[in-house]
Length: 337
Image 1: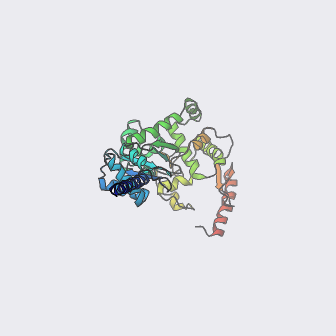
Image 2: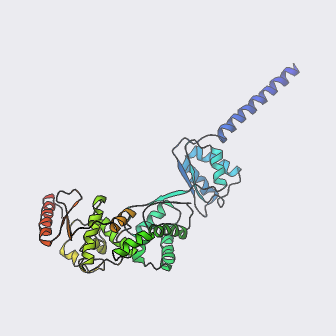
Image 3: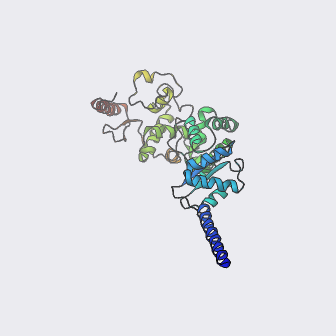
């Protein structure tokens, strides 16, 4: 009878141990079932902050498991400062280990269609830990030392995809992106710019005007040559987007005489030559469209009256007036003021 009790007790211990192992295995090796998520742990975070970040990103149940396993593996907020990608199927113990060891997952920072340097700074702050003020301060320090002025900062960058750690310093971010811009300006491209009597910075500026005039990439070269024709003839560029930039209202559909008289160095109806800096951060494609602009004799263009987004071109002002009248008639018919 005594042996029977011992056997039963031992069997119970084995069952309990097996259940405990099963529970522990399920807890430790439970996998993440959600979509990929990032756990971002900022500088100065507390242990409670880490827990909240994990639960917010990974869900209460799985996030709590990762947090407890993170603590068991000696995790500290200081060592875990960074951004960590947890993908579908990742096991809790391995996610916790990566975070405890500070093994960050790089962040791909992509930007395009950015108007101003302040817009770029705001974009940086939404993707990386650096805030917009510290990014602008890094621009002042690093770009200023390279001869840029605040109004030419936009020519220091080219839209693309860049890989950073989330914790990258503002100086690192500015340096990496500006280095990419410098590599874009190969000796061959510099020779093309010189043949147009333009500096690389002026190409950035002209490209920003071209890109602001149209979203049809297949007419970028044609528009670029039109402005080059005017520029080389010593004529005013008379570009509406430069007026909008000077005013600070990018949503204007019609430019009135009052707006044309707005005194700004960006008003190319008022001042000859290129404005003092880019009016947007233009793409590599647009700059190549400037450098490789096909020859033609057009000096005027007007938005097409069919609202297709394309333009109609003219060599003389008389023809341009006809095109413009047709477009304004279409605007009036559409009730656009």
